Amino acid sequence: MSNSIKKHSIVIADDHRLIAESLSHLINEMPEFEVAHVANNGKALLGYLEKAGTQPEIAILDINMPLMNGVVTAREISARYPLLKMLALSMNDDETSVIQMIRAGCRGYLLKDCTQAELHRSLTEILERGFYYSEFVTGKLIHTIHKEEKAPAPVFRLSDREMEFIKYAASEMTYKEIAITMKLSERTIDGYREALFEKLQVRSRVGLVLFAIRYGWVKADPL
Image: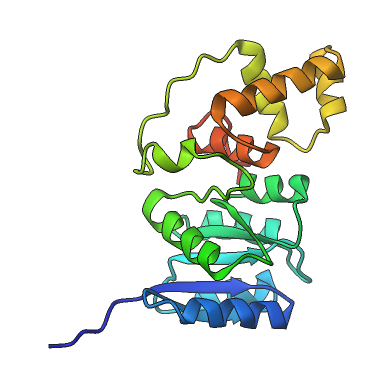
């Protein structure tokens, strides 16, 4: 009797060869995952997906790539391969770039200096829950509620103005621009932000956007 385990297939797009190879090596050491392909940009990854006989389950996408960056790549994958789950790969905590990736269809994001344990956790949660919330973007609440991807949204008492703020927070607007648009002071906007972080148990704007998209309060970018 064979003891072989069916492995979940991963593809990576990153123009930094050393990082891509390191990620690939770490993933291939995991008994339940394997890397099917590594591409150096989004265009090359889409070319691979068009010819691949079997669609992978997860794509890890660098944000900044030549020829076709992560945002455009994520939008194309969302349109062509809606069942392929995506993780954004970021060099730093650039909230604007990461939010663009989330709006384009990514289910979470990893920092390039993540540990193997976090990498494994992100891949597992993407498969089992549909989204990955790193410790940077959220507290403990989201890790313990609604394990199923299609679970109903938890009930929170949010005001219309708080929901309006969430919509703007999911855009590329700065907090100052949000204040001007909502005709409020920057201090009041800071108050909304901190109150929502506390209510939703998130730690960053990225976490807030992930939460909002996860439960349908904010829609991803139109294709």
